[in-house]
Length: 134
Image 1: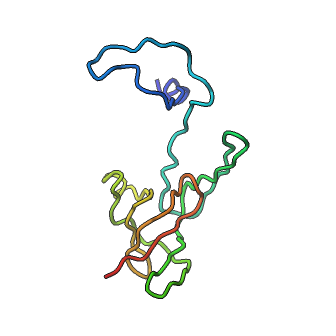
Image 2: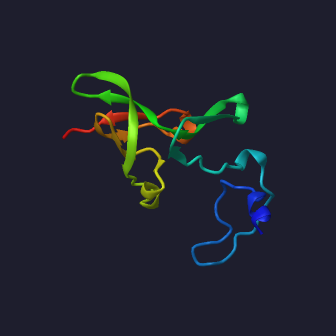
């Protein structure tokens, strides 16, 4: 069963079902350009980064885990690299907090205080954050 699930294509198309529960008739099969990928789910650990080729030769750096972020302080207008201590809140999914998974919008605890992640770590390959006021 698990092998079957891992080999299923992830499609970016609309659902096969209408809101009423009826079926849309398929006009054609899935195209490669419409396929998606599993989310990276960036965890709080030592840095692990994977490079992946995308459509048109574009390259995406998928950050699988990281423990350092580029922190911007709006008061002093300076950026610095700081260590991430833990994940405090995650508006994407509350279960991500206990698993220490970071996405865009996540509130993290750093050495300099609380910060909000402004980048998409699973797509951009880096964690950029802005320091929150006290």
